[in-house]
Image (tube, rainbow, N blue to C red; front, side, top):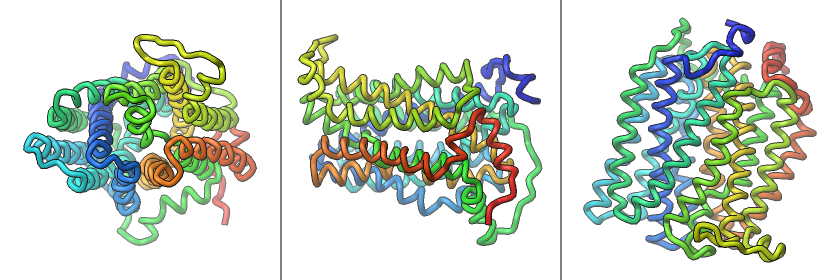
Length: 435
């Protein structure tokens, strides 16, 4: 089907995508809950910003180590099975933490070890999940599907941190147990998916086949530029690792405040995910992507300066018991979430449209290495720098760095800056690769 045939059709009328959407909500909900619980408990146990960074590093290592294997597996085997198994392993990892928390022998080292196990499963889950969408919906609905998929993640991100923060007041074991059950439910839903099977010739396992995804990306400046822009923006501008410090030390609050901060970022993201799912972007995709990443950097700076901005403008309202600086931080995080979602939807649609099905697993795995791990690596960067210069300085340096990345990428990838409709990426993808 072409775009003209599908442009008025609702994405939720496709039952396979609806099941996929529900599965992603459950797994994303569990992921957000465990993220809040793990970050809070590690910081509560050690009081170390560096240890918060280690959580990100523990997730980055398996993603980097397994990148080539993951893509090859996604292209050779049933993606539903691969995704379902990875979600089930996540469930086992959370069950281990639940037992440890209930038994009273939870420690920093055990948490990091389980996070490493969790990261191994996520390494297979994310690229497989992204490459599966194109087999569920017609190409004309892909942009809407990407936005709706993102909205499911953001919806879970709103609810998950709030639930996780509140349940932490009762018992961390309860948080991990609920996460485990949600992951197993998501794995079950994934198995029920019906996809449009496209015959794929299984290449022999060779070094060239393993590195094919990297080669494909580096010969397509449009895709390479989109990935590079997001990679460095998130590594530098990500603030998630700093949220426990802001909640506990700067705003003098508890785990519920940490949940509110995470919810703020997700709320902005959800609003624009739903907007893009109903009204996909049809013009100026490249310029808009660069602009939204720049807004992301500016919002990062605003978050870092939230206390000072309120003092400068002489405003310190109390709303629902929340102080002016805390409200300013929530607003900055909401803007970060909204701007990041726009760039993510544009980038993911470009990558899926510009990649043939037999290569999507490997290309998605490389994309996830650079993009998915940028969150983990960004957490490590922020935690490490916060240990040296403080949390606020770490955030500000990251925001300024993001703006510099945008400026460099505009010059380095002019084709990407000129992209109008996301469908235009097919024209560039079909061009002979540059030698």
